[in-house]
Image 1 (cartoon, one colour):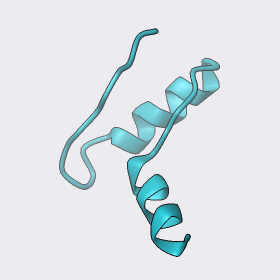
Image 2 (image 1 turned 180 degrees about the horizontal axis):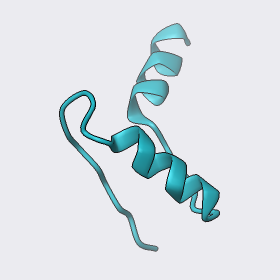
Image 3 (image 1 turned 180 degrees about the vertical axis):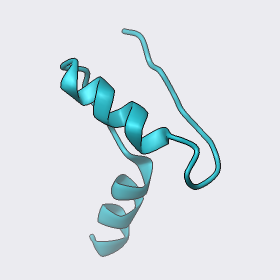
Length: 41
């Protein structure tokens, strides 16, 4: 299993990279979404 992590300041292109990965069929996990879901739980 390979994992590619991206980090950066707001507006640096992280979301665009995630969109390209999803379009290529690569699963994308957004940590902010995971954290928010856990907080709600």
